[in-house]
Image (tube, rainbow, N blue to C red; front, side):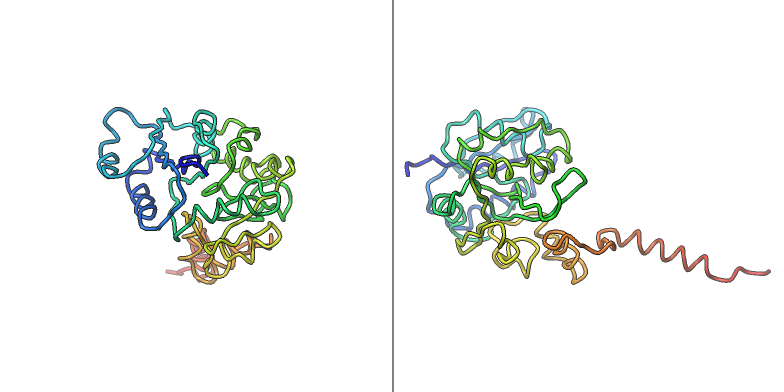
Amino acid sequence: MAASSIAVVHLIRKSNSLTPFKEFMTSYKEHEEPLDHDLVLIFKDFEADEDASYLEFLAETDFVRYDFFGDEGLDLGPYVEVSHKLDYQYFCFLNSYSKIECDRWLSHLYDALQMAEKAGIVGATGSWESTGVADPPFPNPHIRTNAFLIAADMMRKIKFIDVSDKDDARFMESGPKSVTRQVIDLGKHPYVVDCNGKYWPADDWPKSATFRSGNQEGLMVSDNRTRAYSSGDNWTREYLFDLAWTGKPSKANPFKRHKIRHRLRRYFENKRPKSTR
């Protein structure tokens, strides 16, 4: 492969502050990656001189800068624009909260895209979750867009809607016309790739231990959702596992415990005998 035919694209969103960017760059530098690529950094919604602290942190880093003006499009809007305007054969997209967790992570993704049968898109994580009423019914396999590799010509065949909010982004990730489903409609397959370079077809994703399964020991690129699972107690993990892999999560959402506690407190307060003074 010729050098710089792969773009590793990371989104820097001004409103997220410097911290997640530093965490990503630290993980990028700590983990060995021999495969030739360009690091493309999307500066999203930055005005003049607002990038000084970022550039200072990048003083000894080679990168390609891409400016995306305004804060529209969430992650996918900038990804689509970059894939149409920059001349690379492959794009590996990593969102603002991604952190690399192993060596050779890009090599693993690239090898899977080349070697897996009819591979059209590969990612660090995937899910069977059906996230809303507009989604296909469970199981609904889709590659999560926090970290994925795709050929430029495939990316340009996908029809994207204008992404203006999280519902639009969810539609493109897990809806009936998701990126994954469009890849499948084009005769290709999605694969999840683990930290050992093993690629997993959609039917085996729960076994990959990359997303909300086991201790996520196969995880290659983490994000805020994988970290929520890692830091969760048994109740939280069971709820998130079921959401992703059984389609039958408990109705007691652990992320709304404060509401449950409040309701229980009010219930027992109402049961207490009233003072007769």
